[in-house]
Length: 476
Image (cartoon, rainbow, N blue to C red):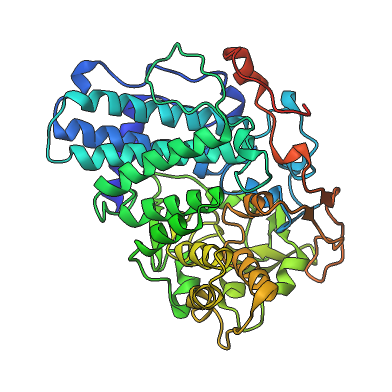
C-alpha cells in the first residue's frame, strides 16, 4: 500500500510542484508534463497515469479543503449538516448560499479539476503512437478520470438533466479533450456534456482492468460512475445495466464501522490510501479538529438527520459519534474522523462503494414502474444495515424509502446536494441548533427554494478572466 502511494506522490512531485493553497489558484499551469521523451516506455505511461490520480488528492477535489471540495460541499450546501458555532467559521458563505461570482465558491475545485483533465489529455495524446501491453488499461483509466473530473465540475456549475425540463439545453461546462494550453473553450450544453461523459465512461468500462489495485480505478468503479451518470440523465435502463455489471459485494453489517476506521475495505471499489508521511492529507479536518473530549466541530450532524437513523441502523455508529468540548455535547461526523488509535483526520479517501450500484438500481427500477425489483435492490442494502430492516413499501412510500435510504447511506459522502438538485427539490433545513439535543444555534439560512439559481454555482471570475468565452450562469 505504501509503495503504491509513494509512486503516486513521487509522480506528483515530478510532474509539477503544485501548491495546495486555494488562494494561489490563479490559473491552470500547462507545463507540468515533461518533453516527448517522458512518454516512451510502458513504465512511463504507468507513472503518468499515477500522476493523474495524484490530482484527485488536491484539497479542492478529494484532498480536504477549508474552502470546500468534493468531500464536504455537497453536504454543506444541503441539509445534512448544521453550522457549528464552536468551529472556525469555514465555508459559511457556501453553507448560507450567499455566494456571488467574486466569491468564487468552489473555484479551487473548478481549477484543480481542469488541471486533472489537462494531465489526462496529455497522456491520451501521447498514447496514440504507443503500443504496449498496458496501453488499453492506462487509456481507459485516463478517460475515466477525465470523466470524473468533468462530472464533478458540471454538477456544481450546471444543471443536472433530470432537474428541470430545460436542463439539457442549459449551460453546462467546457468538455476539454485537447492538451492545448492556449484554448479558450466555450461552455457546451448540459446534454452535450453528459453525452461525452457517457462516451468516455463506456470506452473506459470496455477496456479497463477488472482490478488495478488500491489507489486506482477498476471496472467496478467505472461502472458505478457510469450508472450514476445515466441516473442523472434519466436513462433508467442504462443505469440499471451499468449497476448490474458491478461485482463487488455490498459491505456486510459487521464490516461497516470498520470501513470508516480503515480496519477493512469491504464494499469499496475505489479508494486512495493515506499513508503519512508519503500522502499526508488530513481530510478529516473538513468536519472537525481535536479529539472526542476536545472536539472543535466545523459542522455537526443536523439533528433532523441524526434522528432519522434508527437505533438498530449500524450507520449511526459508523457515521456519527458523541463528542464534547467545554461541557457542550455534539453529534459529530465520524466519516473521515480518524482510524482507531490514529491521529485525527488521517483516513483513506473513499470515492466509490458497491452500495451505490444497488441504490442507483433501486431508484431506476422504481422509475420504470418495476416496484418489486426496486424493493429487492433497496433491501440488498437495508438487510446489511439494520438488525430488523424495514421493507414492503409500495407506490410513493417506496419512492420515499429509496430516497431516505440514499440519504442515510451516503450522508457526508459527496451526494446530498446533487440528489436534491436532480429531484427538483428544495433544501429545507430544520431550525434545530448545533448541540446534541437539537438546542443551540441553528444555521443562518434554512431554505433554498427549488428552482433557485443558487443551485448552479457561479463560474469563478478568475476563470472568466482567463477565458473570455465563458458565459456566466444566470442570476449572478
